Image (cartoon, rainbow, N blue to C red; front, side, top):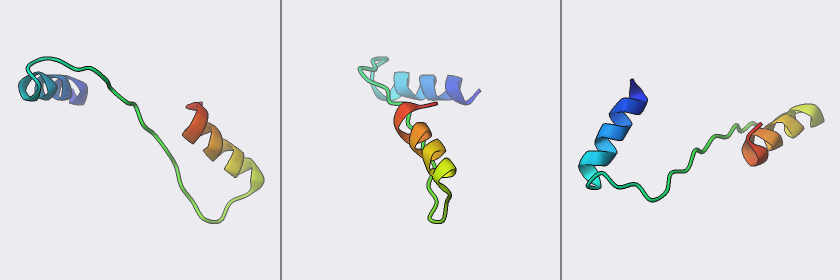
Length: 48
């Protein structure tokens, strides 16, 4: 439902045109192990 609402809002605000969309995700923490840091890096940089 949220995707449908986003599409409808984009159509309304930008005359139905969308040139670029960025799917951005990230996780942040301050105290982590090397394995968790690697997982965060993969999420933030490689989207896996």
